[in-house]
Length: 270
Image (tube, rainbow, N blue to C red; front, side, top):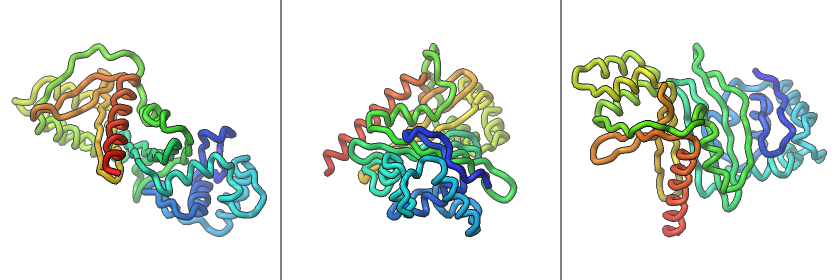
């Protein structure tokens, strides 16, 4: 188990050790987070470990209250941030990585407030290794930028052409690489009829990012790929898969546009 202490002093973005997070999230009624952020994720804590984690939380500065109730004593901005996840109007989930090695994030929005939890998970023998949890609080206007910040290597304006690839082969390669099945992906691109852009994609793919925007009206999915040539967004167009080169600004704009459209549809359906 990691150090149960909670990290940094800023109430806008705080990192919690695994033990501290389990104790904290278990104290928040009405918040039903998905894996890997639930109280039951990771090894169960002994009573002694739970007490040690709570003592470390209270000594860290993120729990300044002294009333004895962990949630009520939590720093007000962090408490508000956690409670955003209880009844969000919109949730953006993102998974960035290859195979089982992913950074998972959940951004939630309620009115003008937004909050995010994120952590790294890695496959190990017998299960998954979970890293510390970062809790962030922000405004709705910060949402797209914060989601995109979780993707690395987006600096620099892209200077590449849009790639158009046959959808069946392209999606099969992306799926295989996303599952960590490099041999399957290479077998696909070894076919004689696979276009050169797909060959370059399969050989140089470093990471896959799936971003889901979910409201009561449904879910919209954005897919982005990191290759040796830089980042691309993937979308269907006239039966083929289009890969469009993006940098951080371009992807923030694309995600913000999707977010705005989702909110407009949500308002129209209310």
